[in-house]
Each structure stands twice: as C-alpha cells, then as structure tokens.
Amino acid sequence: MSSFLTNDDYLIISRLLSFFSSSYGSNGRLKLIQTLDNSMSICTSISSRIQYQLKCRHLISRLLSVAIQKQITTYHDGGLYFSMIFCTFLKQFRDLSIDSNKKLLLFEQCLNLIDQMIIPFETITFNSIHQLLAIVRAVICKTLVYNNSDLIREQLCLLSVKTFLENITLVNLSEQQLILTIEGLSVEETNLFDGLLYQISSINSSLCSKTTRSCLYFTISLAGDYTINDVDHIETEEQMFEWIHNIANRIAKQIIAYTQLHNGGLILCQKVIHPTIKVQLKQYGIDTIDRLSRQNTSHFCYLTGCQPIETLALDTLDERYFGTLTEIKQIEIGKKNFLQFFNQTRPFHTLLLCSNTEQALLELKECMNASHHILTNTVRTKQALYGGGCSEKVSLVNYISTVRSMMSTEMVIALMVGF
Image 1 (cartoon, rainbow, N blue to C red):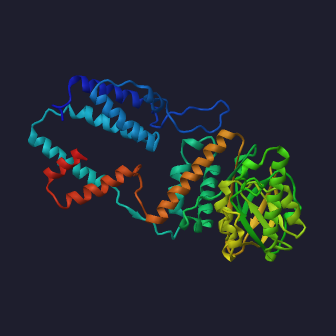
Image 2 (cartoon, rainbow, N blue to C red; image 1 turned 180 degrees about the vertical axis):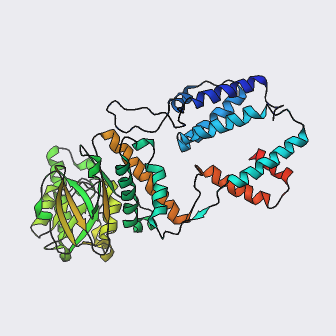
Image 3 (cartoon, rainbow, N blue to C red; image 1 turned 180 degrees about the horizontal axis):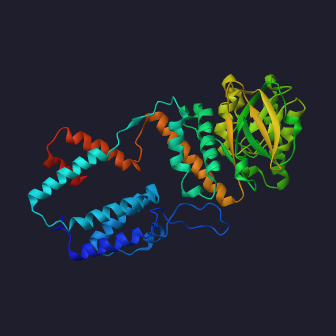
C-alpha cells in the first residue's frame, strides 16, 4: 500500500484529514450550527456541507471524496468519524518502516485487537424497559436536543418508548406511528393521547358520540367531478354545474341505499364531499368528514377496520368495506380543536409534539421517527450491536468472524484489504 501511494497522495490525505477534523471541537463532539433563536439545531457540520463543493482532481482525492460523500449521505455526520479514522490509517501506514515479516506480525496483532474490541451482538429480551430506553437515548439524547434539560430529555425518551409499545401492532403492519405537532407550546406539553387525533378548524359537537357507528372510507373525491369523462357535451359553465350536481345526487342515493348507515353512520373521505351529498346524507342521520388527507388514510383504515373505497361503483360494495367507531370526542389543546376517534377493538394512540418554534418541532419529530425506526428494527431482529454506529461495521463483524474461523491469518489480511 505504501508503494502504491505517492508523496502527493499522502499530502492530499493529510489535508483531507485536517479538513474533516475541523468538524470536531476540543471536547470531541461535533460542532453545530446554532439557530439565532437558540432553538435546537440540526446536528450538522460545515465540512460536510462544503465537501459537496470540493473540486477533486487527483485519483486518490476523488476516490476518498466519493466514498466519504456516500458515507455522509447515508449516516450524516456519523460518516465524518469514519473519514477521519480511514484517513488517519492511510497516513500512519506510510510511517511503518519495518520489514514484511514484522508487518505480518503487526497485522496479526491488529486482528487480535479487533477481536477484543468487537462487542458481540446482544440479544434484546424485552423483559425490561431499560434496554429500550438505552437504545432510544442514543438517538434523542444527543446534541440535537441539548438545549433541553436532562429531565425533559428523559421524559421524551420515556414517551418515545411508551408510544412505540402502545402502538406495537402497527409494527407488524409496517405502518408509521401517527405524530402530530403544535407550535407555540412548551416542549413539556408533549404527550401521548388515546385514540386518533384529527385537527378541525372549528367546533363541531354534532359529531361527538359514545355509541358504535358504522363508517365507510373513500379515497376518491365525492365532489361530483370525478366521473366527468364526456366533456365534449359540456359547453357552458351552467352545464358543468348541472352535471356535477346530478352526479352528487347519484352518489348520495347510492350511499343512502345502505340502511346500516342510517341514524348514526359516518362517511369519511380523504378528499372533498359535495355539499349536496352532505345535506342529503344528514337527512338520514349520516354524518360526513372530508379532507382527511392521504397521510391519515392508513391510520383511519386501521382504526376503523375499513377497506378504503377507490371507485364509485358501489354496487359491488360488501361488508369488508364497512368499519366501526365506538366513540368520538372533541378536545382542545393549545387553542386548537381536535376530534378524538376511538375503537375498543383496535387500540390506537397519537403522539402530540409541542415546541416553541417550527424548526424545533421538525427536529423533534425527526428524532422521534428515528427512535421508532430503530426500535422497530430491534423488535424484528431482537439483536443490537452497541457502539456499532452503522451497518458497515455490523457486516464487518460478521465478515471477520466467519473468515477467521475458516482461513489462515495471511488470507484474512488479504481479504480485509479487499473488503
């Protein structure tokens, strides 16, 4: 390796090492870009941003730059630590002025040190919350949230684990947990709520009930404009309105034909429901909620047990499309109104994050999503490699363990260089 790299190459490596080392402060932590309002700042460093503007002309610098960019893109600033170790290894290897036999002995000693430092996979038994908390702290208790007190960070960790455990059934369905945000409240107001929360613009107590209600969920528009396919016969705006009105009447009649929805039924729609449909359904005691958005569709369908309806051909509708809600409440949080949906047969919980600024909310939500992602993978694999840092190290651990049990030291060294 020392014969392959030239003096210019080593000079480039030294400069790259100095450049990436500038990301770390005297205490060994990454330097941060702090926002002016002293809110939490995203854990990022200037060198990782500047690297994308570097113009690399030499082969070794281009190879290193591409490799490190890939690492940083995947693991963010965690890739900077890898780049520093790798550049240091290349730089110090040149200083080894020993013969080949001693180099072989040195590599063998390095392998022994690696074996001693590698922490084996630890099986997560889930018989204690402490293991889950330790995993979550590695994500939440970092410089990203250092502006909060230790007590608040610990509360956020507990809340993350509690949210994950309460919605554990969503893990098997590969569904993301529902996380809402409210700007303007203190982070101490962050809490986990029973049921599915949906924010509404104004108070609507008529939707509240404590009785079991049948419901349908539409993912298509019920505004009457979905089935306009013969536009050649529509020449004026009045004809367009008449067409939409007739379609709305037909949709309303089709829904009203399902008597199980009368006197308490509920129509949920991802998009818009035509006012004519709302009025006609209300006469039969059928309530409507529209504009639920696509991001809430999977959560509503899970909670209610509905299969989403994607067509207006309701003649083929069967019982599997119908769902149930056992209770609907209305609550006020931070001067904002929410509907709270419940189904006793399908427990559901909503995590509500609060903070004073929009930036802090985005970063807090990112932390929570990351912690839930890690917990989900831990549940599926039931193993953790503490201090692993990235999947490459996990692969390297398995690689070295397998190779050492099968081959001689010389072959291990050759394979490690290839790796």
